[in-house]
Length: 182
Image (cartoon, rainbow, N blue to C red; front, side, top):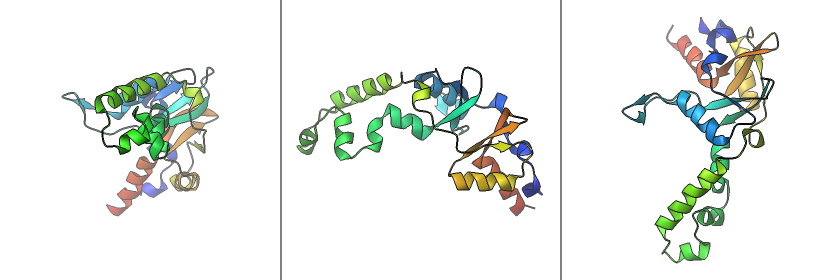
């Protein structure tokens, strides 16, 4: 019965998970995550994988996490702004855009340049703080509780104080789904 499993039985081992450092740039973190997110066939990403990158300090201690949202908010800051911020991020004033004649080529070039510039941001400046961890021998029901109480989708897994893996919400979902197929 999968619901009685321990975290260690479901977790992704650390060696198989995306990891970056506090001193890395977002560009480097994006490429690290992309490698483990995609299985590339014919030049296209065809299978979704990891959606988070663990962030380690110079002593290899886990200090944070990056996810798609935290990365995109820095690369494209206007996604969290109002209408004028979004329009102006494309290199067009709100008044100009309302006139219906924006220069889309110029807006695209400005957007690309801004994403490239923002990709130089250090991971330590934008990483998310840890909002929960779990021990490898913990019950998966405890993991489910932590994930939903903390509104997160990954739990770093520790054993005797050492980071050994990651338990994802999707791993827990699949374990619960097994109950339905028994």
